[in-house]
Image (cartoon, rainbow over all chains, first blue to last red; front, top):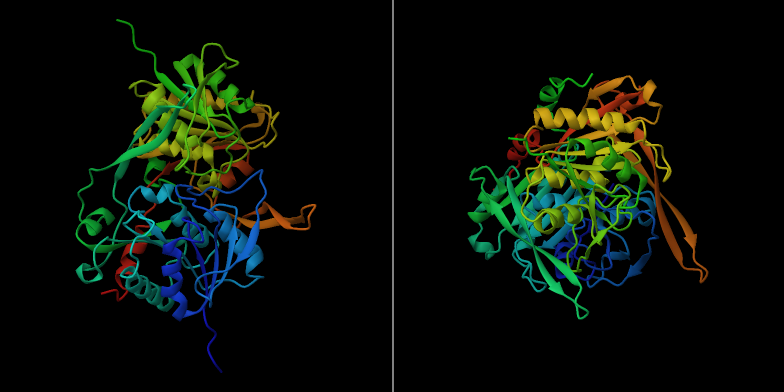
Length: 259
Length: 259
């Protein structure tokens, strides 16, 4: 009796034609049957958005790696996960969901804005072992070759050990040659923030418009954080969950006189 | 010397013209100076999305309550908070951010999909005491009169006590007459989920399209949850934070042989 090959669902937020998702599919193909369901256009910064009040389209597309069946949707990364589970996979439950490889960091507070990580969180909500991968390089032509080794090591461990129930993994990879990566560290999310800034311009008619920008500000010097690991050439893994309850604050609020 | 009136920033995800935000402004106006910065159209389910790669517009608008200055943006609820802080408020830091009153529940897992709550989380990230309010009634014409009492009680307590650092409050109000509300309970987020479903249709040319729907499934019978409180006619308050780290899983992952 042969063992069944794992079913691996792949998605991302940079879109189905991005270089990062291609590298991810290349890296995980040896571990099982791969099905790609990803946005048809960039969906960076979409967080945990779902499409309400508008329709979604789903189309089979040609993927550069022939062994992977691939579909694009007009929706967000979270929509992609939901459509995959409900429609594309025809009732089969994936053994693993991988999202990425994102072009750019999803460390620290970026996890709440990230479409890549929200797809992984949605996978965890669905009970699927899920991992988001990000390389600290925003460039559309970023070099993902070195990242594949990290992806394979983490995926192999996840398939062997399972992922703690109710959590998914946020894996960030420093932008250095693979030989310079010192190892993999399990971390907590650093307490860092974006200080927002906007570039304000005038359109040809004189009306103002804004581009969101911002500056990353990390005041958290803890050596157990993802920022510390990445700054010291380690791959960071943060286990992420979707219980947003600040449990420690419950007792404080119970002191309020709310009647 | 007269005490300075608190500055209260109001936003939502149903749009600046919705009935819920009007009720919220009415409820909080007695506590301070109110400035509204809200989306120009419904942004339900937008989660923590921010606008990247597209421009934002910001316009002053007439608000039904004359004492409140109001602005609409073309962005998401989180964009609204960022634009308010960066541009509209001209360097002033709000003493309080309130978001809502949402038309519909943001209890349990809904917190991660909710634009209303993501605006409050963004406020907390910015260090502003922030509260999201939701009424368990999706109707555009929902009756928010009874909710105002709850809003006022919670806002008064928050202004008096402050909100624990790094957290915001997720306040949900049952859809019953105010006289039937039994009180306010501090809760944890219930472990409940949406089982996704899509309505699949064909457009006039025969091509398929999908509407996201879903069924809410609560298997968590804990009496300390928001679902229990709401089901028993209590207002629920869940303290929410943005540290997504599953701290309990760090030790488990450190057992993995990741090198």
